[in-house]
Amino acid sequence: MMTATPAQAFSNQVDYCRANGAPLTAAIVKAVWDGLDPESALGRLVHDWPRDPLHDVVPLRVAAGLQALHLSGAEPRLTPLYAGELRREEVGPLVAAVLATHEAAILPWMKGPPQTNEAGRAAGLMAGLKWLAGQGLGPRFELVEIGSSAGINLMLDRFRIDLGGTRAGPADSPVRLAPKWKGPPPPDAPVEIISTTGCDRDPLDLSSEADRIRLAAYVWPEMKERTARLHAVFDLAEAHGAPHVVHADAAEFVETQLAAPRANHVTRVLMHSLVWQYLPVETQARIRLAMEEAGRAATPAQPLAWVSLEGDRTLLRHVLKVRYWPRGEAEVTLAHGHAHGGWIDWLAEEGV
Image (tube, rainbow, N blue to C red):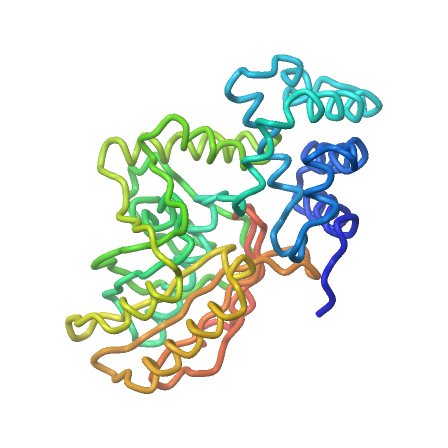
């Protein structure tokens, strides 16, 4: 696969935002590219990005740095932009001026990948678990997540989720997910989460105000429902405790977790969403090898599964895929979905 140029990365991100109902974010990303001074420190970093800027989602790193200035109150000029009050021709000059003024504050945002940690993706992940339970692997699951960020999706059993009529989670949960559903619902099979653990190279703390701003900065501003949902997650974590997320390399973490002892009749699940593209090729290879080896050792009493919800830059949507051992070694594409859980197009046949 050819490495994208910075211009292609920004163009693709604009298309991705538009395709996922975020015209304001698309306008901001376009304004960043148009207004970035190529001779500035930030401009040189973006134009000379050492890896694939599309896979590293460089445009959203800059956009998040901009929104953090707004959320923290550091740049009042951005208020009408994020309120959607500016005319189209006013967006570019404002963004260019803010980039020039606050370059030093934005540069640190370029050091790591976006940490959207979107709770809406829990709907797709739960659909994957429901499907696995329908194959006879349930109802008890142990979740192992890589790229957990603040661990929001490890809280999925605390959310009320409606999957085309198949429901999961407590009815009184303040976090409610009901993506627009196309196709038959997943199996209405019970799912019981026995344990959860996650890792990240830069874990965030849901009780930290700075980390809350960081998470909110990655939420596309026109998506008010996502912002409200994120604050509901903060409240839920404060009331009932945040998930356990450790600072670790993804491959080492997976290898360690797969080697750990466990009870019989519990399906161990490797789970991740919008993280695979950020991993080095060597790390991806180690995880695949570890899963294949653990899969060969899996038994009906100690099954293993892999649930992934990752972006497809060609389809401009997310793709839910599942593998399981023994018996289901072949990868199955279960669904396509909106980038932040707004809709799910279920592709698996009913009962399959």
